[in-house]
Image (cartoon, rainbow over all chains, first blue to last red; front, side, top):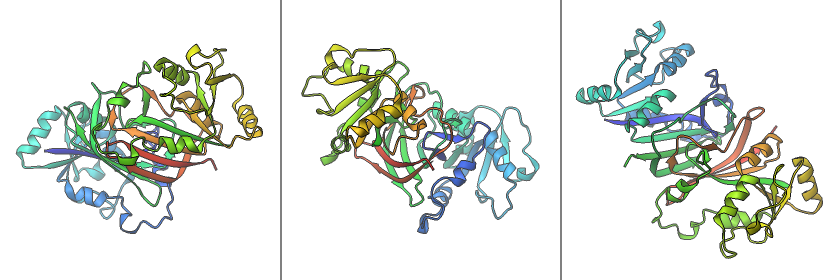
Length: 187
Length: 187
């Protein structure tokens, strides 16, 4: 099963402020830019390419706190697995959308593979770092909001060794966001 | 006087390993890629656009340690000012290439401006951070080597407040490096 990252960061590499805030993500760039058919910066196409999601607890809690209506729910009916060693049940407002998992990630990936899943969307900083360190991430799409925050929660953390990226693609959108794509080479 | 940054980082935002090493910069990407007239990733064009440089002491020491021949010297006869509060004299092998400066950065910029300089190349992590925090950087070109290091010396550090970037440009080179350009908006 292929595992991919699709995430937004600031230009200095933060996915959230220290307190988890992502206000900067919504105010960054030029909101009045004419985006044409790129308004979602490729998100719908990416969602259409995955058949399951694995996200961290904090990521899920951030989504739960948004208290989205069914119309606002961005993940369709894609199966979502939330990783947590502490939380046994999901918050009520997302309980019918997600299932909790505690345990080994290679086991989880193997299980999903056995069930026929082919492409997982991996989300949340800690979760992405864990998957990277296990050599499980095949591709990464990083959308950089045109802002420097100076501090916050970094997308990337300590890794066991240098990780080579290949087949890079990069583009700037009309709203001044930048999108980078990489294939991860663990060799 | 316009001040610009032109610097290479890893995809996770480091300009050097913890020990200052930049070996990864030379081994990253595909060295066999056909780069055509982009072999220097725009460095010569950028150098041609500046008429002076301001760099930090560590940056200068790294260059000094390379012990470049006159043919290898990458900065032509561009005037180079090295910032240091501790070092009064430059190492012998670069002593005729650089001059030392200790003191206020706004004063330095004003002095260079009075002398007719129009575009300064600001180099070195600490120096770039200081210039950013003083609101002195107009443009940034960041060339990201396709590698994750996990830790090291970060390009960006703590800033006084969010800094908005505009007029972004992004491209991927054939060697898998990515180049991003930003205009800094301090408003």
